[in-house]
Length: 274
Image (cartoon, rainbow, N blue to C red; front, side):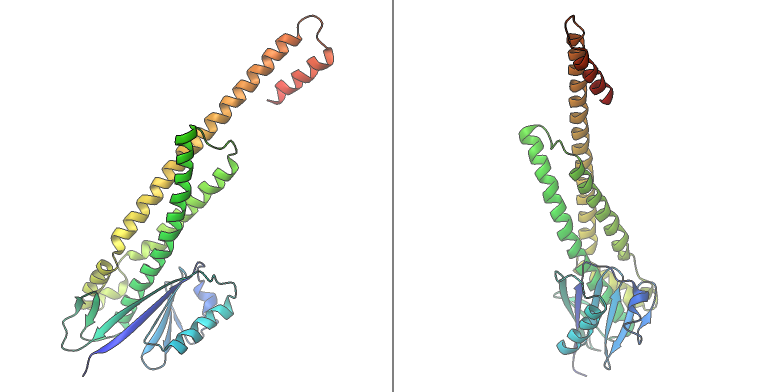
């Protein structure tokens, strides 16, 4: 039996996929809590994950376009800015299972092993998507730090800063909730070789280190934004104290003989408002 190449294609979207709703579009699919699996042709398949990634393998370009078109018909507003990633697996009974020169070699290609490869490629594509988001957040945070270094202060308006902090916290929560799938899948317990396949693939895609780097960046962003927010609050409190002090001083001046009673009343109202 000559070696056979199995090709995997992953597409990561910005949106998440509610699998129960998506099952209505793919009635022939098998659905579980973590994935939706569709058999294509005789050997190929498509696996859709709730974190917005679809992986197709052993499917022609025409078939891939057709299945992705079904996704777009179901959700016409799917983002056009997507992440694509592909990976090859070589099947040969004479091979020893493992990664050689960046390519996974298996002695036998089974649906369970295909699911392991698909999940890992999907995680890598999702990771790249989040890496881009976090890099953008990191750049925006750095611009605030540069302003603080140059001017010794931050913008007086804190509402945009609050929204930015909300975005950062939301992104961190989503990253941590989605990428917990780095945990070993149940399928690895069904085949002794699958456990090693998963370990090798995680190392090939550098998932563990990339995840650690993402988490570290997000923690750094959150800590920096908290510091910037503290500076902004202190600035507003200082200005408030100065304003109150000036109003008190003005009230003292106006209390002197000859001051207008009407102006005196306005100052009192302003002091009370502060």
